[in-house]
Image 1 (cartoon, rainbow, N blue to C red):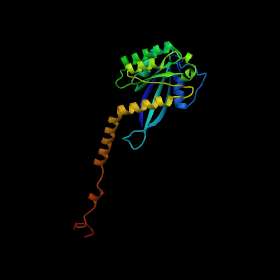
Image 2: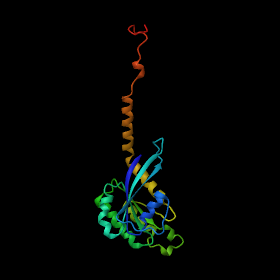
Image 3: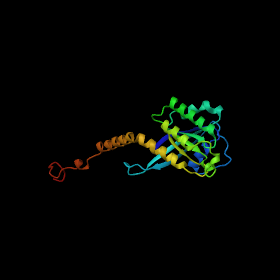
Length: 216
C-alpha cells in the first residue's frame, strides 16, 4: 500500500469539506458548517498498473483546511510535505477563483511543484447545469489558467458526486506514475535479497556415493 498526504485549499464555502465527504463517505450535507482550523480524514483507492499483477492500493491522508482568512496562517502547517493539493473554487463565485490562484502561487513558491500534484477543481457544477446565468467562472478561463500553470483541472459537483471520485483517482495515478520507478526498483531489490538468502535443499542432502554416510 502506498500512502500520500493530500491537502485541500480554497476560499470559505467553496465546498472543500463536501468534496472530501463525498469521496470518503459518499454523502452530502446541505447544512455542513464551516471547518475550523482543519479536519483530517483518510480513504483508500485501488488503481490499475500495467507492470503489476495486482491492483495498487493507495491511501490518502487528507487535510481539509479552513477557508476563512483568519485561519490562513495555519495553512503551511498542513500543506508542508504534501504530495498533492486540491485547490477548490466555486463556479458561481468569481472571487473564489482569484483566491484559488493565490493558493496555487503560494504552493509553488513555498512547496514547489516538482513533486507536488496540484489539481484545480471547480465545484457546484450542479447549480450551473441548465442555469448558466448562475455560472460566474467560464470553463475555458479556468482551463486555460490550469494549462498555463501545468495543473490538473476539472469541474465537479460534491452534491451529486459528479466527477469527485475521478479527481482522486487521477491524483492517485499521477502520484503512482511519479513514484513507479522507485517502487519497482525497491521490489526488485527485495526479490533479489530473497533469492540470495534462499537455501539450496539439494545441496544439504548427503550423496549416496559418499562412503562415510551411515547408509553405505
